[in-house]
Image 1 (cartoon, rainbow, N blue to C red):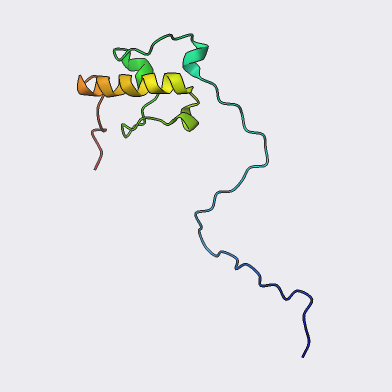
Image 2 (image 1 turned 135 degrees about the vertical axis):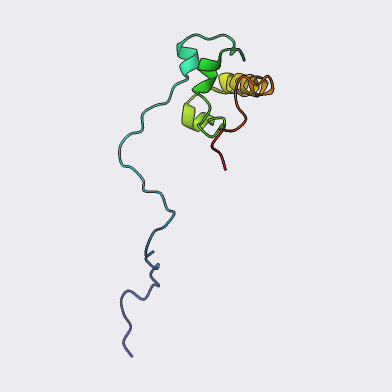
Length: 98
């Protein structure tokens, strides 16, 4: 009986479409807080234009890791968006949502 030099079990190769993410080799661009750059002291719920940048087309609040905002401004954004929704300045969901 012959013993193969590579007797370690191999991992099975995935076939078809997988949910694994491809890692990029490049250096990621540093995300920065747009509100700190504009020197915004407090995020106001009446500023629909500014709040609209941090809400998706489905009506979801964009997370910090995506938008790049700091923790302080993200908390202010969240409360301001929720207040604007209650006062019907921003929609809870989009109109075409099924």
